[in-house]
Image 1 (tube, rainbow over the protein chains, first blue to last red):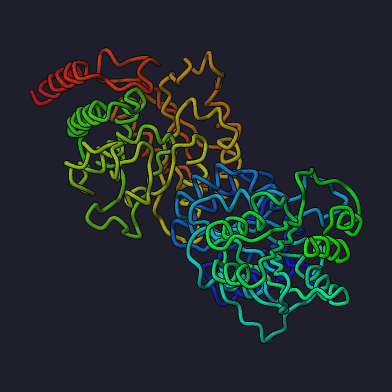
Image 2: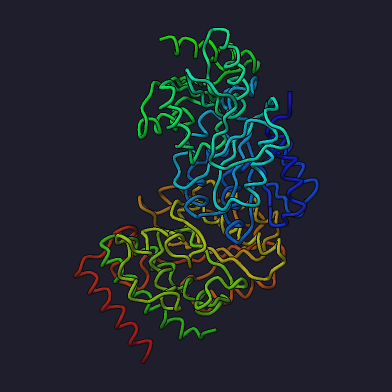
Length: 309
Length: 277
């Protein structure tokens, strides 16, 4: 197992901060969890501890970014996106170059329960005009995205990260391409679009389906907004059967982005795997993935039923 | 730099403009624009270092109108200062106008922040002031919040954090005009003892007459002598100040009709002639 994407983020930001002196980082009493602490330890003069006051952190980050800084504001995804109006007005309407870093996404955080889980964060960020929404699948991809956000991307962005460790899907030769889905394997019966910490599970589910005679394409969607219309349209036309997999409500996130793209361009049958209008709950990450159909066997079972109907 | 007499003349012209603007728009917030205009006038025509012909001059003092609904006052000041042509003022709230009903820096780049959802602008102003500290610059950030706005919890988050960062370059006015939509703050949700609250949060606090240019100037001068603390100037003001019939909470968010606009302008022009005399 590789690193959690939050750890890859923290390490990458501290490394990138050496060259890019324009970066300033804020946290709301969770730097040891979001891993912004690595940056804080190295660059205390460019790190601001804001205490347990996320709304104020969002506005302050917007203000400093409007003076030319690249601001990263960090907390749990649910705590940040819960301050929706501050993000909507001060940050996004203000066109501030702030990167909102929401960790502890999904039910995979486990024992802490629903109030700590980012399960609606993609929906909230995706609806905002011009907002960029990104979710890496592993540590290497996270490093690439942090570099992209720090050095190339201009404007508001939301970066969604995991608490749990993620399997390494890519190696050092990986070339990150903003807005473009990454084909992990190719098949002809069904196309599976997955994002974030569950991409590895979706990939292994596709591998397991071979013995059932089902060949599945698996695409990693690291850019939720703007969504890769081209690849979704093309694979829809080719397979006519589309699946989305995400550790998020099936409403508003990747499932909705794909559904909208299909409706606009190339309608196909769609199965959305994710949290089905439920609250999150306490349990081990494995138990929760089993219960909510996000384990490798759970994903394989749902795709099998979907394809055979 | 300007004399108090010159400031009074400018504020009078701005009052005429903003009443005309709101009248032409058919909607807007005259009460809180008129209560804040003397502070805004003192800032833009006396105190702030800024260059209207070089709006993004890096060394400029910044201004954030946290009580964004008073933006007609700010738009009028920006136009008079020379940021854009005064003919644009009459487009307030109209389709395709850069003068949105509440400030949009995307459409009017001379604005430092998007405001209008109350409670947020002070945090943005704090971030702006923090940028100066990080870069070891001497420019300041001015901000105006409303009295009703201090009912927002986020104001007190910023109240707590600005002293932590020793933001003595953050100078905030409370436009204490005693009116909000549903009544006076005393009835809607009491904010008193407001000066004590800011002092308790470790701010440098002054209470002044917000319609006395001398008091406003003096209060800002006093901020220069107090280091390592953010500054709160409680400006006691009057909603609708300058127009006899626009006082009180009824004129918070109501535009004058044609007749009322003409009446208000007549009053203000009369006042302007007295200033000139």
